[in-house]
Structure formats: structure tokens, C-alpha cells
Amino acid sequence: MSPTQDLTQMTEAELLRMEREIAARHINKFPYFAVFWAFSNFVVWLSLWPLVFMGVIPLWLGFIIASLNITLSYLPSHEAQHDIIAKPGSPLRWLNQLVGHISTIPLVLPYRVAKYTHMEHHKHANDPDKDPDYATHADGPLSAIWRSLYYRQPRADGGLNAYGAALERIGRPDIVLDGVIYQLIHFGILFALAWSGYAIEAALLWWLPRHIALTYIQFYLSWAPHHPGNESGRYRDTRSFRSILGNIGSLGMQYHIVHHLHPRIPLYRTPQAYWEMKPILEARGCNVHEL
Amino acid sequence: MLTVIKTIFYLGPLIFGLGFVAPLSAQIISAAGWALPFGLTPLIAGLIIGGGLGFIAQIRGTWI
Image (cartoon, rainbow over all chains, first blue to last red; front, side):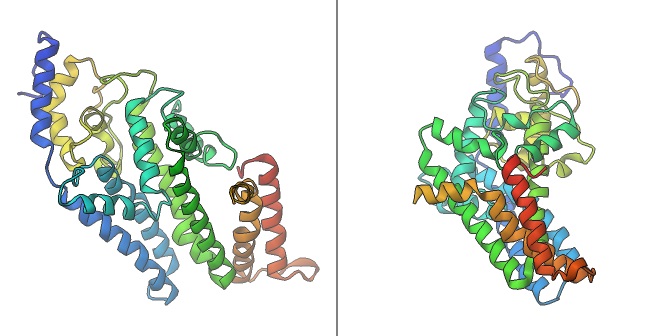
């Protein structure tokens, strides 16, 4: 199918069949790079601590690498959340779960919290009452960054603070405990390092990089692909967009509409799937005008 | 136990101010070699800064 082909005359059933055929070609591909990425990213971040403490690398360099590490920590877990590495019951299921749990440790985001709230986001994208990520909606990029910071404040009721309410709503308040344990351990480590004379190192290898990463992730994974975010429905709640930082700089989110339509397509296959599906998405009236 | 955890999280800004911002401020002051007024030590200055900012954040519910 040509990317410019006009399919507006096709029926709903024909469009759906073609879309599913394209998706089927990209599903069930093992994401080798995401698995390598998960472990190497985590090991590099861990290694920064002794390297900086022993003076092998300067703290400013450790800060830059840690900011990249933590920003990159979410996506492998995201693949695991959608069972892309291995489905339940398959021999490599343990690897799927291990990637899910390990990769977001630097982000202080427990796997189960991320997974269950993310599934709610998929079910209710752009719903102000049910989408756990709704607080990232904003009029423009600067406003999106401000709201990301604002909703991370102690008594804010959106952002990550809204995840607890979402878990209670779906009947899994037990998973809130994962978040509590992660937070207590995170702050316990920060306080212990700080009172042992390593406060600046703790701030620049974990605390500040984590906030930079959360802002970047919420901007590119939540705000940009859903903006303006005033419609709901399978073909209306997400879009494709052109990022000034390209697809890699936007953490692979330029083609996020494909992910919402077929969440089990691995991240690395979404660009190809997008270009194959684009005439169908245009015929559906999707917001795919920028790319 | 639940009450203890809820209290810790409720007092989060104050605890973070004293537990992290205070030693962080003290170590930044020491590293920068800043001279402090009134004979303050970096740690006392850090506790004033961290405790003060934490107290304000505790009252306002936000650091920004």
C-alpha cells in the first residue's frame, strides 16, 4: 500500500481488516534491544556511584550520564508492561517481569504501579476522571513542563500523586504499598548518603536526574502524543507529531498513535507500522497531519 | 503502622527539608567556601535553610 493512497471510500470492516493485517506483521517480534537496554542502562547508572565516589569520573559527568540513564529507564519497562518481551505463561515470562521491575528502579516507579496505571491510561485516555495521566494535559509545551513540576508537589492531586487514587478505583489498593516502600527506600538512601557527607553526589546522581527524567518523560510520553487531548476514542485520543528532537529525542513517541491502537507492537517497530498504516489512519480521520 | 506511614508522608516536606536539603545546603556552603555571618557553621546554616524551606513547603503543600 502506498503511504499516499486514498482509502476514504473503503468500508469500516475493510479498514479494520487491513489495519489488523499490518499490526500482525509487527507483533510477536522479540525486542532484543529493549532487553539489552534495560540491563545495560541500569548497570551504567549503578556503576556511576562507585566511579564518582572514587574520583574515576567527575561529578558533572556523572550527573549528565545519570540524567540520560533515568530518562531512558522507563521505556524497557513499558515494553514489559504490555507483555511484549514475553506473554504470561511463556518460557521467557520471567525475563519480561525482570525487565519490568529492574528498569524503573532509578525512576523510583514500581513495576506494578506503572503497569496497572498505564493500563488504565490506555482504557481511558483523555478522560479527566479516569485517565491517571490526565494531569499532564496543557495548552502548550511550557505549560506542560510547569504542570509536570506542579503535580509532583507534596499535596498536588494529579501526576504521580493520582496513581494511588487510580489503583484504589480499580480495586488494587494493595499495589499502593509498592509505591510507599519504593518512596521510603529512596528517601532513606538519599538521607543516609546526605548525612554521611555525600549529599551533593546523591542530589546529582539521583534526586535531580530523576526530576529531569520525570519532566522529560511526562512531556514526551504523555503530553506531546495526546495533545490537545480533548477527544476520546480509539482513533481520536492520540496523534502522531513531529518533534524538533526527532523520534529518538522524543523517546520514540512520534508514532505513539500506533502504540495506542496496537500496544503489543514493540517500540522499535512502531515507525514502520505507522507508515504502513498511515493511509488507514487518514481514512479514519486520525490526527496524523504533522508526520 | 499505617498511621506512622501516613504521618511520615504527611510531614514529608519538613522531613525532606531537614533530612536532605539541610546536609545538602551545608555541603554546598562548605564546598563553595562561603563565609557565614554570626559565626554560623555550615551545618547550622544548612539546618536553618533546609528546615525553613521544608517548613514553608509543609505549610503551602508545595516547594514551588
